[in-house]
Length: 418
Image 1: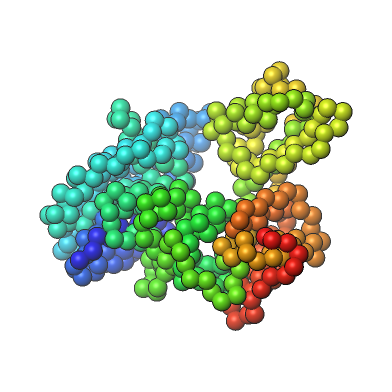
Image 2: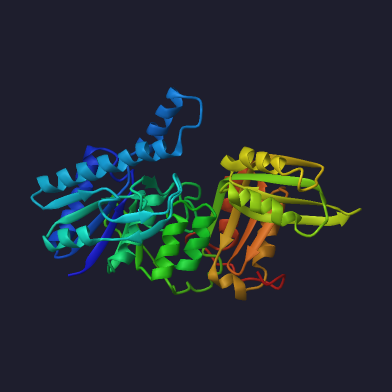
């Protein structure tokens, strides 16, 4: 008998029929002799619908505390309905909200991080032979305030819970049957990966691959949680996410990701004095604005230009923050740019294979596109480009690195070490 955490996303429980299918799958695993803890997201588009309701009520930004109170109800509906469905199949079950399950977080509304898990009630219910169903995406502060974990928070809940109860495996059920070399909706010949390393998956998740949330992968890596991504609609083998993964012969790039949620902020004519950049990024950090790629140009007459990327949703806020510190950071002007996308290649084999980045630049250039910004690490290269021809770029890169199914693989060249 093993202890399994099973996580089902909103599309998997989007209506009554899907809820029944999921319940049947859970009962099947329980009756095989396993203990099952299930984490569930809100049904379908419930979260988006609740957000839209607030916009109809007021044009002002709603209080973050009340938004957490509101959005946490979506998962509460899901867990209750799933528990009812499982019990209708003759299997004992109990549903818990995040706070009932012992999920404690920091006191930050909308993007809280888990600080502790006290799973005593979960263990008690498991000992009673029940399926335990936990609401994802939510927790509680030490002061008793309801919090939410942000987008993808149910993935994080599932993996953190698996670590806390020392589950044998954490299975993430989605509407695709594993991790693919790129989005199969964009590239029809994308290949499913039988396994992938935590580091590769973390890069892909951070770079726009939406199958797993980055924080969930971080938890899995930090606590060595065995992770499997598989479909809720079939019984196909999924993708294992693990510390080390067997390299497919000749495959250097494991996957290609893209992120459309990108804006470029440029600060022009900055006084070239020690501490200027620190002031800018400290101010942004205080407002919870994440900064990605940073590029600084040369210095001319004691003035420098530099640019960085932020989430598109943070663009206006970032510009306002920078304008607010104009008095302490001397600069000529701040500008912003939209209609950009970040496309990235990821693979553990890149560090020891020459010519990988050069191939990427060549492919993009051959399509007649300019590269605005570049960022590299040992296992990834990212380029910020205009967004207009993204599907074409992804397909061209996918083919160039031998990732199309039934295709010769890319084996590198002498151009560089990325």
